[in-house]
Amino acid sequence: MSRLWKFAGCLLLCYSCLSSARAACVITEQAMLYAGPGTEYDKTSWSLSRFTPLRVFNTWNDWYQVKDIDGDSHWIHSKNISTQVYCFSLKQDNTPLYDGPGDYYSQQRTGKKYESFYFGKRQGDWTQGTDGSDNAVWVKSDLVWVQ
Image 1 (cartoon, helix red, strand yellow):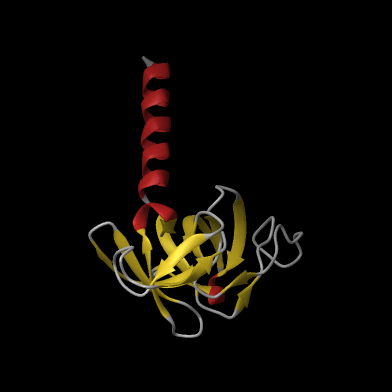
Image 2 (cartoon, rainbow, N blue to C red):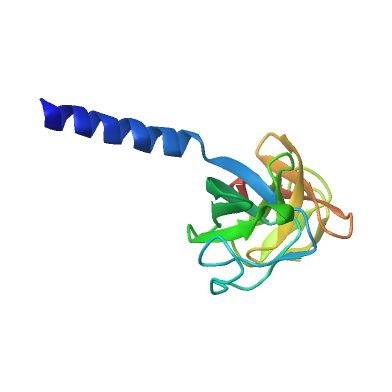
């Protein structure tokens, strides 16, 4: 019986960790990711640009443990992100970016994997976003990672 209760407790703990995960967005021009909650830890990645989406799943003081688009775990300082702003990244290179919500609109250009945008809205199978230069684009929703 004791093992059963321990197992149930572990399941409940895992569920609460997963359910507390929340979306976050980089709000500074650049942000660094670290291997642990502090600048004394090694940097784990290149610097992130504004509007990069992340998934927060743990906190320690002023640091958030996050997962990126590739599912890798990092730590980032709280001053660099917001859970009140929504953003998305492109999942692949050569993603067509359009003027409106459909491929019958003019294609502005193609985007690169990891290129990030401020989330605007969804319309049907399309997602609207704004880049760091305030240019609005539309992209097929299955080609973006929204957090």
